[in-house]
Image (tube, rainbow, N blue to C red; front, side):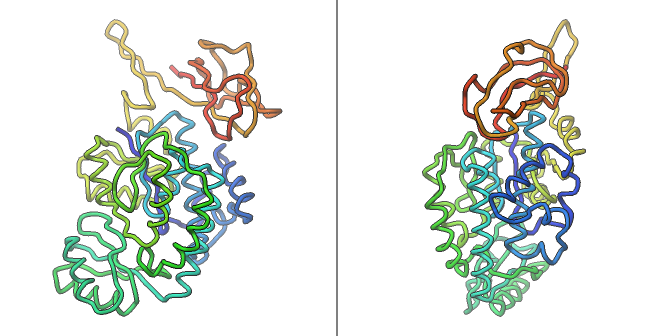
Length: 392
């Protein structure tokens, strides 16, 4: 079972979008810029490290690039049985699973970043990573401090993040080392995220969440708040409202995925932070990162036969491998198919399968049409699958 994972704030690096700017999925950057009212391409291509450390910048840049990578992965036909995102990455997971519309998600991520930045300016806070100590012992270290400090992230065995008032975090870090932690490492962040210090951000974001339409998930999403699987639209209003002030239960989420049968974990977005956490938590799991378009071919080879991306047929002892690809809508509107193209038709790369209004729907691949996924006269959204084909 394949699971897509989406990184959160902290995975961003300067020019992280450069490898993708000529890929068809880059169109999502322009859409995000229009919705957010800011130049997202500049964040992904030109912003320096200091600019990207700012909460509202890092969250928007990381979310949009994650969606670019997700769109690129779906274009080569790889599908996930479930999704999980770390903190901000939960919004990416919900968008990928169909719970959130992309434009709604861009608005929410923008509001979330602004709200968290304002809350951090209002209440001085910081975070620290405690390495080499059991979760319970980190909890004890926080409890023994008189000031405000809490566990913010349960990331992996022996890797827990605490957050709160700077003096309290320093005292809890010292106590953790007394209890046996190998290291207590201050993190260069501007706030105590996933703690009660984010209450003002939660209250501000609640208004935006309450005005958002959630849909039932196409595939399950693991929530940060409870580390459990959810598919119902009605769950997410409360889960997202609680997320900002609750610890991220990432280790618990990974164990829940393992129990459900997940064996291949693909990190969709910048960096490889989540892949490293899987390595520490689930020793036998297959781990794949997608950071550039060049990684897409390696992805298909790595997940092998029998997956969502490959179909295997046997004829007289010979194994023939075929890759299935999706053709997605380039725009929103009413779909009109080309009636000359039918199931079984062999098409060349660039063939027009129909139109969305006046916009042609071109196949990025050559192959044999296996079926249309959109009906004549159906109103479709941008990036909605239109047809699927097979490449021998």
